[in-house]
Length: 82
Image 1 (cartoon, rainbow, N blue to C red):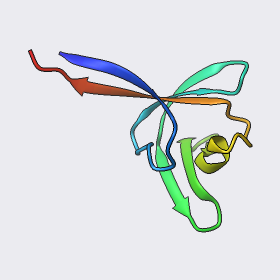
Image 2 (cartoon, helix red, strand yellow):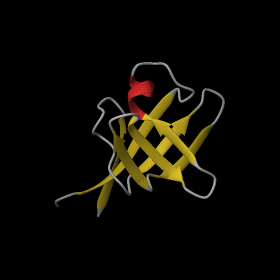
Image 3 (tube, rainbow, N blue to C red):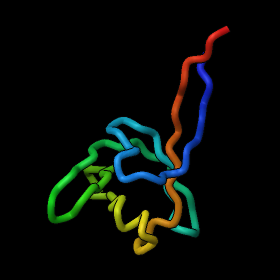
């Protein structure tokens, strides 16, 4: 059996490709999968969660409180031992 945990985003390197995310803009929460975690010198760390619609957020700007994203949670499944 697997147990689910929900972690708040607190570190720049916390999200990995394939992670399930809960993203809030302060009005609504969407769930999405991190399709790509892009790191560049110019933009920093960006998480793309819908390539077709070009939906993404910048992790550094979110952590600094300077972005449209107000809350990000990472849903993780962990194996439990019995």
